[in-house]
Image (cartoon, rainbow, N blue to C red; front, side, top):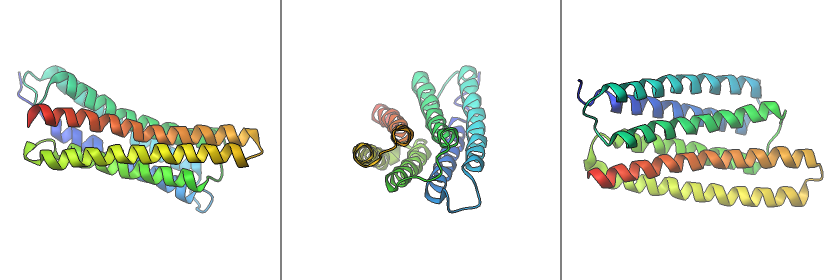
Length: 207
């Protein structure tokens, strides 16, 4: 049976799709209502990115079953692939919710949360890209801590946004829509933090 396979190539390819999804999400939030591209068009682009990521994840799981000697613990590799896939699933949920709820303008807090999501996605790509060489252990751990901090920032922004929403928004339908949007955006950062925790565990076990 083959040794190791091309796991790191697949990790990197998957992470590239995560960054693409994060960028498209930020573009959607920051340009909604100010661009010729509609929310539905952004959502279709995100759907295509998520589909490509699904194919990569499937290839990774298949490779895991066919490989005798893996670079890391098999369960950890499976968790990493699944957790990376969860990030794009959540980004897709955000875009689909915008279309479903017909949200045509978003608040500054929603844009801020999308920017934090983008930063988290970029750092996920950084830590995944360094996994093949444990000489980068300290850099990886530092970046994982940055993801954790960004998740905390997103949580704080979400709580503040929901508080202001209940205080200032008279339309209860709009309250429900935006509250759901804030929570979904914050959950994207939670999923990025999940990846960071798995990567941190891999580094601590193998460096």
